[in-house]
Length: 103
Image 1 (tube, rainbow, N blue to C red):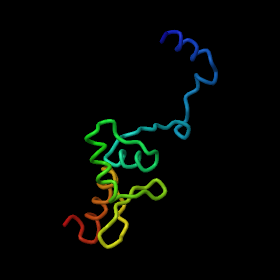
Image 2 (cartoon, rainbow, N blue to C red):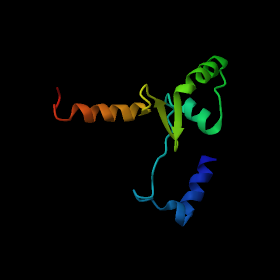
Image 3 (cartoon, rainbow, N blue to C red):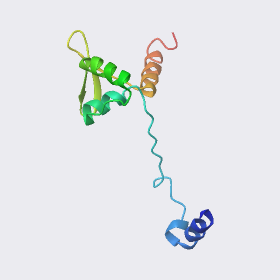
Image 4 (cartoon, rainbow, N blue to C red):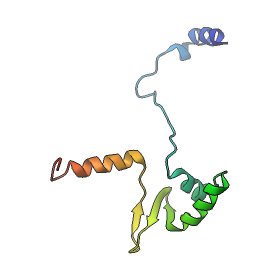
């Protein structure tokens, strides 16, 4: 089957061209800690594990979604944006590279 696909692709003028960097991209989905919360708020889906579903139902009262962004309710009625791992690393890098430098 792989040989047939290669043969068909090599004979097709559209498929044989190499895409430019503007046309090629990769989409990857990585599940982080926010995924169950967003699935519950946006689609109403609970985790299949009953223990995780119970925990989510109990904790979900502290969170809310605004335009597909997850927030946690602060103690002083402030909105705290929930960050993923890569976003948190970026914020920490920006903070540590600020006025104080590497201090």
